[in-house]
Image 1 (cartoon, rainbow, N blue to C red):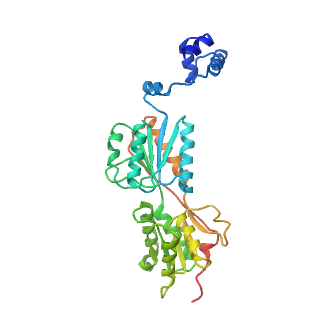
Image 2: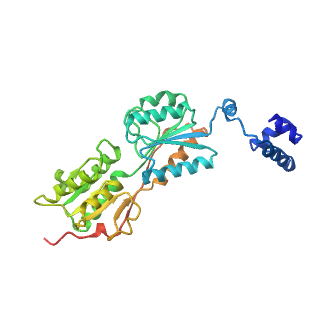
Image 3: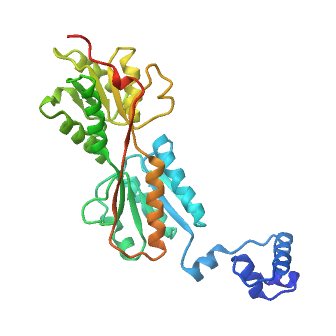
Length: 325
């Protein structure tokens, strides 16, 4: 900065004001400083700035899988909000491993991120207590934190969305509606199972339920078992987009009404198009990051627990009627 000040013929404080975007510098003088910065190849010492201001202008994001389209949309929205606040986003995937989640959070905190946004893989977040007590704000998104941690949380209406999907299939005349869910250790999977069960009431049959991680072999085996029952299902509700895609492959053209939770690419181009209950991953990311930046701006109010709505998109697969009895 001294070299820049000397080259531009200004005081050191003037260089500081230009570098930090502060007012009070004549435009012509500011332009002279910027020209000297370009000529000398000056870059700000971020470590010194952190020591002085106590902020790193970075936030950490822990998601399940950065390659998953749902989490990619959520992460992109967080990044856009971070950029608008002059912050850099650090992100990593937990792969549904609670140990990896803890490792990522601790690594981000060691790098002194200003705040955290977490899609939790586990339900024990006591490891975060010291960071929260030290003033590092955290927002949980898509799934809530474990017991004893009360922080801002942004979820979608998982149970309500499942009820909406099943009610739609029932309105088409279906009474035997199967459910292919996900790993029952996942909060969203259990919430969607609860919504499915509540919407069926006395029609609920445990033989029509599968709760495990999707895969070509397991999903195909589950469908074959259900379709071989004396009273087989005439409709299928799938618990997320990965389950839906796997189920479509496993069906191999067999005609079954289908409504899935989560929209996915090309769902509208299939024949018939796939009816889905769509949540808003970008909305989840945007709301969560805006909450975080409000905390960073000094909001010390009680933790907020928000639930975003979902919507039904009808495209044809969920409107297929049951076969004549």
